[in-house]
Image (cartoon, rainbow, N blue to C red; front, side, top):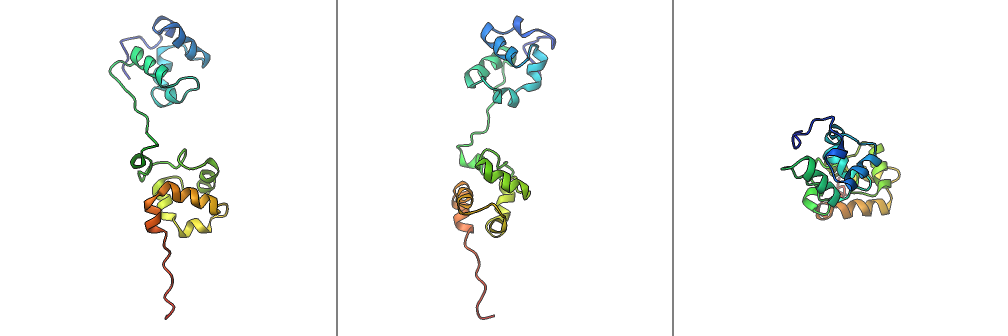
Amino acid sequence: MSTNSFAPDTPLQDVLPLNLWRLLARHDIRTVAQVEQLYPKKLWEMHYVGPVRFREIEQYLFSGKKYEPLDLSNPDVMLADGASLEGILPARVFRVLKRHRIETVMQLKAAYPLRLSEISGIGSKARHDVEEMLGDWATANSRLKKPDARR
C-alpha cells in the first residue's frame, strides 16, 4: 500500500495530529507500517475510530484512497449470495447456523425451508428472523410442496 511517501518505520507522532496518533497509540500502533497493515477493514472496525477519525487518518496517510465499507442497510449488498450471515442475523441464530455449516446467504437459501426446519435451535423466532432477512425471496420460496395424495 502506498502512503504519502512516508518510510514504514516513520513514527505516527511525526505524521499525524496529536489526537489521532494518541488514539492509535492507545492500541499500541506507533508506526506508519502498523497502520498500513490494518488499513482499511481492521482500522475501520477499531474501537474509538469512527468514520470521521478514519477519514482523517486516511487523508493523512492514504491520500487518494477512500475505503467504503459494505452498507448492510442496502438489501442488494446484504443479500449477495456470497455474503456472510455474520452481522446480518442475530448472533444466536448465526451461531446455530454456523454449527450446521451454513455461513453465507447462498448456503442459507439452499437450506431454506426444509433443512432449516430440521436444525435444532431454529425455532419460530429464529425462522422469523431468517424470513425477515431474506424478505421477498423467502416468501416466494417458503411454500412447501405437499406430496400428492393420489399416489
